[in-house]
Length: 413
Image (tube, rainbow, N blue to C red; front, side, top):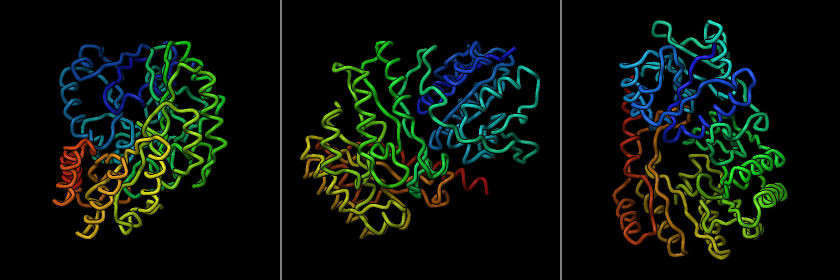
Protein backbone atom coordinates (compact mmCIF):
# COMPACT_ATOMS: atom_id res chain seq x y z
CA UNK A 1 0.00 0.00 0.00
CA UNK A 2 1.32 3.43 -0.91
CA UNK A 3 2.24 5.62 2.04
CA UNK A 4 0.30 8.76 2.81
CA UNK A 5 2.15 11.76 1.37
CA UNK A 6 2.07 15.06 3.25
CA UNK A 7 3.76 17.99 1.51
CA UNK A 8 4.95 21.16 3.22
CA UNK A 9 3.05 23.38 0.82
CA UNK A 10 4.43 26.79 1.74
CA UNK A 11 6.52 29.67 0.45
CA UNK A 12 9.08 28.98 -2.26
CA UNK A 13 8.55 25.21 -2.19
CA UNK A 14 4.99 25.43 -3.51
CA UNK A 15 5.81 25.28 -7.22
CA UNK A 16 8.23 22.36 -6.89
CA UNK A 17 5.74 20.37 -4.84
CA UNK A 18 2.92 21.15 -7.26
CA UNK A 19 5.06 19.73 -10.06
CA UNK A 20 6.14 16.67 -8.07
CA UNK A 21 2.62 15.79 -6.98
CA UNK A 22 1.46 16.35 -10.56
CA UNK A 23 3.99 13.73 -11.63
CA UNK A 24 2.53 11.32 -9.06
CA UNK A 25 -1.00 11.91 -10.37
CA UNK A 26 0.17 11.33 -13.95
CA UNK A 27 1.81 7.98 -13.08
CA UNK A 28 -0.71 5.13 -13.08
CA UNK A 29 1.21 3.43 -10.26
CA UNK A 30 0.87 6.38 -7.86
CA UNK A 31 -2.15 8.27 -9.20
CA UNK A 32 -4.36 7.14 -6.31
CA UNK A 33 -1.98 8.12 -3.53
CA UNK A 34 -3.39 10.08 -0.60
CA UNK A 35 -1.78 13.52 -0.77
CA UNK A 36 -2.26 16.19 1.90
CA UNK A 37 -1.12 19.77 1.26
CA UNK A 38 -0.09 21.31 4.59
CA UNK A 39 0.77 24.98 4.92
CA UNK A 40 2.79 24.82 8.17
CA UNK A 41 4.12 22.56 10.89
CA UNK A 42 0.83 22.44 12.77
CA UNK A 43 -1.01 21.31 9.66
CA UNK A 44 1.56 18.57 9.06
CA UNK A 45 1.19 17.34 12.64
CA UNK A 46 -2.59 17.31 12.30
CA UNK A 47 -2.51 15.38 9.02
CA UNK A 48 0.41 12.95 9.15
CA UNK A 49 -0.38 9.39 10.16
CA UNK A 50 2.28 6.96 11.42
CA UNK A 51 4.38 5.82 8.50
CA UNK A 52 3.58 8.86 6.36
CA UNK A 53 6.10 10.37 3.97
CA UNK A 54 6.53 14.10 4.48
CA UNK A 55 8.08 16.00 1.56
CA UNK A 56 9.78 19.38 1.91
CA UNK A 57 11.32 21.61 -0.77
CA UNK A 58 13.17 24.82 0.02
CA UNK A 59 15.92 27.24 -0.96
CA UNK A 60 19.07 27.83 1.05
CA UNK A 61 17.92 31.11 2.69
CA UNK A 62 14.93 29.24 4.15
CA UNK A 63 16.94 26.38 5.63
CA UNK A 64 17.12 27.85 9.15
CA UNK A 65 13.36 28.35 9.37
CA UNK A 66 12.65 24.93 7.84
CA UNK A 67 14.92 23.27 10.41
CA UNK A 68 12.81 24.71 13.23
CA UNK A 69 9.56 23.59 11.59
CA UNK A 70 10.95 20.11 11.02
CA UNK A 71 11.96 19.78 14.69
CA UNK A 72 8.45 20.78 15.77
CA UNK A 73 6.92 18.15 13.49
CA UNK A 74 9.33 15.36 14.43
CA UNK A 75 8.62 15.88 18.12
CA UNK A 76 4.95 15.07 17.59
CA UNK A 77 4.72 12.64 14.67
CA UNK A 78 6.13 9.37 13.39
CA UNK A 79 6.90 9.90 9.72
CA UNK A 80 9.72 9.73 7.19
CA UNK A 81 10.94 13.17 6.08
CA UNK A 82 12.53 13.79 2.68
CA UNK A 83 13.95 17.15 1.59
CA UNK A 84 14.42 18.23 -2.00
CA UNK A 85 15.24 21.38 -3.91
CA UNK A 86 18.39 23.34 -4.55
CA UNK A 87 19.63 23.37 -0.95
CA UNK A 88 19.22 19.63 -0.48
CA UNK A 89 21.05 18.98 -3.75
CA UNK A 90 23.85 21.44 -3.05
CA UNK A 91 24.26 20.62 0.65
CA UNK A 92 22.93 17.10 1.25
CA UNK A 93 25.01 16.45 4.36
CA UNK A 94 23.99 19.75 5.95
CA UNK A 95 20.34 19.05 5.10
CA UNK A 96 20.44 15.61 6.72
CA UNK A 97 22.12 17.00 9.82
CA UNK A 98 19.20 19.41 10.17
CA UNK A 99 17.02 16.37 10.90
CA UNK A 100 15.82 14.98 7.58
CA UNK A 101 15.79 11.24 6.99
CA UNK A 102 16.44 11.47 3.26
CA UNK A 103 17.55 14.02 0.69
CA UNK A 104 16.52 14.04 -2.95
CA UNK A 105 19.46 14.84 -5.20
CA UNK A 106 18.62 16.58 -8.44
CA UNK A 107 15.24 16.65 -10.14
CA UNK A 108 12.50 14.83 -8.31
CA UNK A 109 9.71 14.00 -10.77
CA UNK A 110 10.81 10.36 -11.02
CA UNK A 111 12.45 10.10 -7.61
CA UNK A 112 9.37 10.83 -5.50
CA UNK A 113 7.20 8.27 -7.30
CA UNK A 114 9.90 5.60 -7.05
CA UNK A 115 10.43 6.38 -3.35
CA UNK A 116 6.73 5.91 -2.60
CA UNK A 117 6.71 2.62 -4.48
CA UNK A 118 9.82 1.45 -2.59
CA UNK A 119 8.16 2.28 0.72
CA UNK A 120 5.02 0.40 -0.33
CA UNK A 121 7.13 -2.67 -1.19
CA UNK A 122 9.26 -2.44 1.97
CA UNK A 123 12.42 -1.82 -0.05
CA UNK A 124 15.41 0.25 1.00
CA UNK A 125 14.89 3.86 -0.14
CA UNK A 126 18.41 3.84 -1.54
CA UNK A 127 17.26 1.28 -4.07
CA UNK A 128 15.88 4.41 -5.76
CA UNK A 129 18.26 6.58 -7.73
CA UNK A 130 18.53 10.19 -6.59
CA UNK A 131 18.40 9.78 -2.79
CA UNK A 132 20.84 10.13 0.08
CA UNK A 133 20.86 9.51 3.83
CA UNK A 134 23.18 9.52 6.82
CA UNK A 135 24.96 6.37 7.88
CA UNK A 136 26.81 7.29 11.04
CA UNK A 137 27.86 10.81 10.16
CA UNK A 138 28.63 10.01 6.53
CA UNK A 139 26.52 10.72 3.48
CA UNK A 140 25.56 7.63 1.48
CA UNK A 141 23.72 8.14 -1.82
CA UNK A 142 22.25 6.21 -4.71
CA UNK A 143 23.57 8.84 -7.11
CA UNK A 144 21.91 11.88 -8.56
CA UNK A 145 18.65 11.66 -10.51
CA UNK A 146 18.70 12.07 -14.26
CA UNK A 147 17.52 15.36 -15.78
CA UNK A 148 13.98 15.19 -17.12
CA UNK A 149 12.43 16.42 -20.32
CA UNK A 150 9.79 18.99 -19.44
CA UNK A 151 7.25 17.68 -21.93
CA UNK A 152 7.26 14.30 -20.16
CA UNK A 153 5.70 15.72 -16.99
CA UNK A 154 2.85 18.10 -16.14
CA UNK A 155 3.72 21.67 -15.24
CA UNK A 156 1.06 21.84 -12.52
CA UNK A 157 -1.27 19.56 -10.57
CA UNK A 158 -4.74 19.61 -12.10
CA UNK A 159 -6.40 16.80 -10.07
CA UNK A 160 -5.62 18.60 -6.80
CA UNK A 161 -6.14 22.06 -8.33
CA UNK A 162 -2.63 23.23 -7.52
CA UNK A 163 -1.73 25.67 -10.27
CA UNK A 164 1.37 27.78 -10.72
CA UNK A 165 3.39 29.67 -13.30
CA UNK A 166 4.21 27.51 -16.33
CA UNK A 167 7.82 26.34 -16.36
CA UNK A 168 8.92 26.75 -19.97
CA UNK A 169 12.69 26.44 -19.49
CA UNK A 170 14.84 24.56 -17.00
CA UNK A 171 18.60 25.01 -16.70
CA UNK A 172 20.66 28.00 -17.78
CA UNK A 173 23.68 28.46 -20.05
CA UNK A 174 24.69 31.59 -18.11
CA UNK A 175 26.76 30.31 -15.20
CA UNK A 176 26.50 33.44 -13.03
CA UNK A 177 28.75 32.83 -10.04
CA UNK A 178 26.12 33.72 -7.43
CA UNK A 179 23.18 31.72 -8.85
CA UNK A 180 22.22 28.15 -7.97
CA UNK A 181 20.16 27.46 -11.10
CA UNK A 182 22.89 26.47 -13.61
CA UNK A 183 24.63 24.31 -11.01
CA UNK A 184 21.41 22.56 -9.95
CA UNK A 185 20.02 21.97 -13.44
CA UNK A 186 23.19 22.05 -15.58
CA UNK A 187 24.39 24.84 -17.83
CA UNK A 188 22.08 24.12 -20.73
CA UNK A 189 18.52 25.01 -21.61
CA UNK A 190 15.69 22.50 -21.72
CA UNK A 191 12.51 24.01 -23.11
CA UNK A 192 8.91 22.88 -22.88
CA UNK A 193 7.56 22.62 -26.43
CA UNK A 194 5.00 25.04 -27.82
CA UNK A 195 2.56 22.16 -28.31
CA UNK A 196 2.92 21.14 -24.67
CA UNK A 197 2.50 24.73 -23.45
CA UNK A 198 -0.59 25.03 -25.63
CA UNK A 199 -2.05 21.91 -24.03
CA UNK A 200 -1.44 23.32 -20.55
CA UNK A 201 -3.05 26.65 -21.41
CA UNK A 202 -6.05 24.82 -22.86
CA UNK A 203 -6.44 23.07 -19.50
CA UNK A 204 -6.07 26.35 -17.64
CA UNK A 205 -8.83 27.93 -19.67
CA UNK A 206 -11.05 24.90 -19.09
CA UNK A 207 -10.41 25.32 -15.36
CA UNK A 208 -11.48 28.99 -15.55
CA UNK A 209 -7.96 30.40 -15.13
CA UNK A 210 -7.62 33.60 -17.12
CA UNK A 211 -3.95 34.52 -16.94
CA UNK A 212 -0.62 32.83 -17.60
CA UNK A 213 2.76 33.50 -16.03
CA UNK A 214 5.98 31.71 -16.89
CA UNK A 215 8.92 30.23 -15.01
CA UNK A 216 12.24 30.55 -16.79
CA UNK A 217 15.70 31.79 -15.81
CA UNK A 218 15.75 34.12 -18.82
CA UNK A 219 12.52 34.76 -20.70
CA UNK A 220 13.89 35.76 -24.10
CA UNK A 221 16.07 32.64 -24.21
CA UNK A 222 13.03 30.49 -24.93
CA UNK A 223 13.71 28.17 -27.87
CA UNK A 224 17.43 28.91 -27.88
CA UNK A 225 20.23 26.45 -27.20
CA UNK A 226 22.79 29.13 -26.39
CA UNK A 227 23.19 32.83 -25.74
CA UNK A 228 21.43 33.95 -28.92
CA UNK A 229 17.79 35.06 -28.93
CA UNK A 230 15.29 33.13 -31.03
CA UNK A 231 12.45 35.58 -31.54
CA UNK A 232 10.65 33.20 -33.90
CA UNK A 233 10.41 30.66 -31.07
CA UNK A 234 9.31 33.32 -28.58
CA UNK A 235 6.60 34.51 -30.96
CA UNK A 236 5.42 30.95 -31.64
CA UNK A 237 5.09 30.44 -27.89
CA UNK A 238 3.22 33.69 -27.21
CA UNK A 239 0.98 33.36 -30.26
CA UNK A 240 -0.04 29.86 -29.18
CA UNK A 241 -0.77 31.01 -25.65
CA UNK A 242 -2.81 33.95 -26.92
CA UNK A 243 -4.80 31.71 -29.25
CA UNK A 244 -5.64 29.25 -26.48
CA UNK A 245 -6.26 31.86 -23.81
CA UNK A 246 -8.44 34.11 -25.93
CA UNK A 247 -8.48 37.90 -26.11
CA UNK A 248 -9.85 38.29 -22.57
CA UNK A 249 -7.01 36.31 -21.02
CA UNK A 250 -3.84 37.89 -19.66
CA UNK A 251 -0.27 36.95 -20.58
CA UNK A 252 2.58 37.99 -18.28
CA UNK A 253 6.00 37.37 -19.83
CA UNK A 254 9.39 38.80 -18.86
CA UNK A 255 8.12 39.78 -15.46
CA UNK A 256 7.65 38.17 -12.05
CA UNK A 257 8.56 35.37 -11.38
CA UNK A 258 11.04 35.57 -14.28
CA UNK A 259 13.26 38.17 -15.92
CA UNK A 260 14.99 39.17 -19.13
CA UNK A 261 18.69 39.64 -19.67
CA UNK A 262 19.61 43.22 -20.60
CA UNK A 263 21.45 42.35 -23.81
CA UNK A 264 18.32 40.57 -25.05
CA UNK A 265 16.24 43.73 -24.86
CA UNK A 266 16.07 45.06 -28.42
CA UNK A 267 13.49 47.09 -30.36
CA UNK A 268 12.47 43.92 -32.21
CA UNK A 269 12.00 41.94 -29.00
CA UNK A 270 10.02 44.72 -27.34
CA UNK A 271 7.78 45.20 -30.37
CA UNK A 272 7.03 41.48 -30.30
CA UNK A 273 6.18 41.58 -26.59
CA UNK A 274 3.93 44.59 -27.11
CA UNK A 275 1.84 42.55 -29.55
CA UNK A 276 1.16 39.72 -27.11
CA UNK A 277 1.74 40.50 -23.44
CA UNK A 278 -0.35 42.31 -20.85
CA UNK A 279 2.35 43.24 -18.34
CA UNK A 280 3.34 46.90 -18.21
CA UNK A 281 6.76 46.16 -16.69
CA UNK A 282 9.83 44.04 -17.38
CA UNK A 283 12.22 42.57 -14.82
CA UNK A 284 15.75 43.14 -16.12
CA UNK A 285 18.84 41.60 -14.54
CA UNK A 286 21.35 44.37 -13.90
CA UNK A 287 23.07 43.34 -10.63
CA UNK A 288 25.85 45.96 -10.45
CA UNK A 289 26.96 49.30 -11.82
CA UNK A 290 30.58 48.11 -11.86
CA UNK A 291 31.81 46.40 -15.00
CA UNK A 292 34.60 44.84 -12.98
CA UNK A 293 32.09 43.19 -10.65
CA UNK A 294 29.89 42.05 -13.55
CA UNK A 295 32.90 40.42 -15.20
CA UNK A 296 34.06 38.81 -11.94
CA UNK A 297 30.62 37.23 -11.40
CA UNK A 298 30.38 35.99 -15.02
CA UNK A 299 27.34 38.04 -15.93
CA UNK A 300 28.42 38.28 -19.59
CA UNK A 301 26.81 41.66 -20.21
CA UNK A 302 27.91 45.26 -19.81
CA UNK A 303 26.71 48.17 -17.70
CA UNK A 304 25.79 49.92 -20.94
CA UNK A 305 23.60 46.93 -21.86
CA UNK A 306 21.57 47.63 -18.72
CA UNK A 307 21.17 51.33 -19.51
CA UNK A 308 20.24 50.62 -23.11
CA UNK A 309 17.70 47.99 -22.06
CA UNK A 310 16.04 50.35 -19.61
CA UNK A 311 15.90 53.17 -22.13
CA UNK A 312 14.40 50.93 -24.82
CA UNK A 313 11.88 49.42 -22.42
CA UNK A 314 10.62 52.84 -21.39
CA UNK A 315 10.38 53.92 -25.02
CA UNK A 316 8.16 50.90 -25.71
CA UNK A 317 5.87 51.57 -22.77
CA UNK A 318 7.34 49.19 -20.18
CA UNK A 319 8.51 50.12 -16.69
CA UNK A 320 11.92 48.45 -16.18
CA UNK A 321 12.34 46.83 -12.76
CA UNK A 322 16.09 46.37 -12.64
CA UNK A 323 17.54 43.76 -10.29
CA UNK A 324 20.58 44.82 -8.26
CA UNK A 325 22.66 42.53 -6.05
CA UNK A 326 24.59 44.40 -3.36
CA UNK A 327 27.58 43.26 -1.36
CA UNK A 328 29.12 41.02 -3.99
CA UNK A 329 32.61 39.72 -3.15
CA UNK A 330 35.55 42.05 -3.72
CA UNK A 331 33.40 45.19 -4.08
CA UNK A 332 35.31 48.34 -3.23
CA UNK A 333 34.31 52.01 -2.83
CA UNK A 334 34.70 52.65 -6.56
CA UNK A 335 32.27 49.80 -7.29
CA UNK A 336 29.80 51.22 -4.78
CA UNK A 337 29.98 54.63 -6.43
CA UNK A 338 29.43 53.09 -9.86
CA UNK A 339 26.37 51.21 -8.61
CA UNK A 340 24.88 54.34 -7.02
CA UNK A 341 25.45 56.24 -10.27
CA UNK A 342 23.74 53.52 -12.29
CA UNK A 343 20.75 53.37 -9.93
CA UNK A 344 20.32 57.12 -10.16
CA UNK A 345 20.66 57.08 -13.94
CA UNK A 346 18.14 54.27 -14.36
CA UNK A 347 15.54 55.81 -12.08
CA UNK A 348 15.86 59.13 -13.91
CA UNK A 349 15.03 57.21 -17.10
CA UNK A 350 11.87 55.84 -15.46
CA UNK A 351 13.11 52.51 -14.08
CA UNK A 352 12.68 51.09 -10.60
CA UNK A 353 15.44 49.39 -8.60
CA UNK A 354 14.68 45.89 -7.28
CA UNK A 355 17.16 45.43 -4.43
CA UNK A 356 18.83 42.23 -3.20
CA UNK A 357 21.78 41.45 -0.94
CA UNK A 358 24.36 38.89 -2.00
CA UNK A 359 24.08 35.54 -0.21
CA UNK A 360 26.85 32.91 -0.44
CA UNK A 361 24.57 30.19 -1.75
CA UNK A 362 25.64 26.54 -1.51
CA UNK A 363 26.46 24.89 -4.82
CA UNK A 364 27.70 28.11 -6.43
CA UNK A 365 31.29 29.24 -7.10
CA UNK A 366 30.79 31.95 -4.44
CA UNK A 367 29.53 29.58 -1.72
CA UNK A 368 32.57 30.29 0.48
CA UNK A 369 32.50 34.07 0.08
CA UNK A 370 31.76 36.45 2.93
CA UNK A 371 28.08 37.32 3.44
CA UNK A 372 26.96 40.41 1.60
CA UNK A 373 26.87 43.77 3.33
CA UNK A 374 25.23 46.83 1.81
CA UNK A 375 27.78 49.66 1.85
CA UNK A 376 26.70 52.89 3.50
CA UNK A 377 26.62 54.99 0.29
CA UNK A 378 24.51 52.35 -1.43
CA UNK A 379 22.15 52.07 1.54
CA UNK A 380 21.68 55.84 1.65
CA UNK A 381 20.84 55.90 -2.05
CA UNK A 382 18.44 52.99 -1.63
CA UNK A 383 16.62 54.72 1.21
CA UNK A 384 16.17 57.85 -0.88
CA UNK A 385 14.88 55.85 -3.83
CA UNK A 386 12.54 53.80 -1.65
CA UNK A 387 11.09 56.96 -0.12
CA UNK A 388 10.17 58.18 -3.61
CA UNK A 389 8.80 54.81 -4.76
CA UNK A 390 11.68 54.21 -7.17
CA UNK A 391 13.17 51.21 -5.33
CA UNK A 392 11.82 48.15 -3.54
CA UNK A 393 13.08 44.78 -2.39
CA UNK A 394 14.19 42.50 0.43
CA UNK A 395 17.79 43.64 0.83
CA UNK A 396 17.51 44.16 4.61
CA UNK A 397 16.12 40.67 5.32
CA UNK A 398 18.68 39.15 2.97
CA UNK A 399 21.54 40.62 5.00
CA UNK A 400 20.30 38.44 7.90
CA UNK A 401 19.90 35.39 5.64
CA UNK A 402 23.41 35.86 4.28
CA UNK A 403 24.84 35.94 7.80
CA UNK A 404 23.01 32.74 8.72
CA UNK A 405 24.35 30.95 5.68
CA UNK A 406 27.88 32.01 6.54
CA UNK A 407 27.47 30.98 10.17
CA UNK A 408 26.20 27.57 9.16
CA UNK A 409 29.15 27.15 6.81
CA UNK A 410 31.60 27.97 9.63
CA UNK A 411 29.92 25.42 11.93
CA UNK A 412 30.41 22.69 9.32
CA UNK A 413 34.16 23.23 9.22
